[in-house]
Length: 338
Image (cartoon, rainbow, N blue to C red; front, side):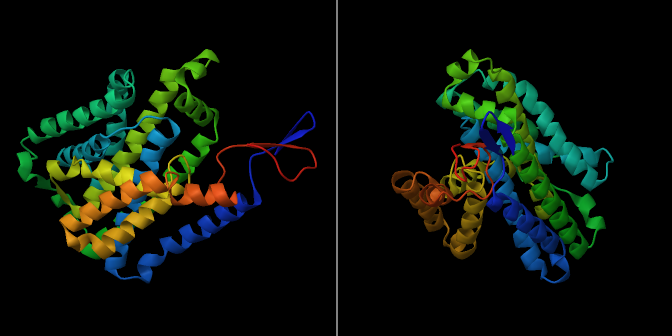
């Protein structure tokens, strides 16, 4: 909180402080969960972590920077591929996961030089093309064996329980780090600039915002987050198949989770990921009917609940657990305006 000429700038709310405290306690409890829960529960929670990472990254890109992509599976897959290659070169698996995700972020830099010059549908389609080009390139590697794929056999040095717990702890630590970094970014000048660009790129440029620099930062960070999700998935499944790891279904899942939870909200994608996970658990065995059901739910939300679950709740109740914007109020006035 700071004072400006009779006004007070509130950057935190009581609900925000309570939420951070509760989240910290939850993180500590989750860290000890492998000692109490079954292996099946730990595997499912690791999958949920992957979904949350993907949803938060797509929302960062599309919801806060206005960059609607249908090709984020490019980084999900290429991060895992780089990790495979590093292990093949002699690196230990778990360090290779982090370096592989970093490699995906590096390759996102030259990609951004070209795709960020495009807007709207052109950008979305260009990202899908990028994903397909990377998938075809990876398939040509003899290590991958085309559509057959390969396995990360180096992980077999760990017994199944140890490997499961290591994957879970790695995912939990990465999730906590990514969520914290995303929250900090959205509350920073870069986050404010990204939202200004999303609302009106020309107006943002007219007030001195370096549009390409801000978009590139968001683009690369979103690529890195998707790559982290990809390496966690690889560590859990052990197998790598280009059609799966570069599959368009990952971006479809991202879009669904963010749409259901609430685009342009911090909490919404997390809620959307939980909803998607539960739907998959209860209805995933219905095959094509399940996919049709997901499509119907997405259309229903787009038509009747465009703000998503959390966005609608926040709008109607003014609840904001983790505010990403400062609020300005008169000194002595408990209310304020964003």
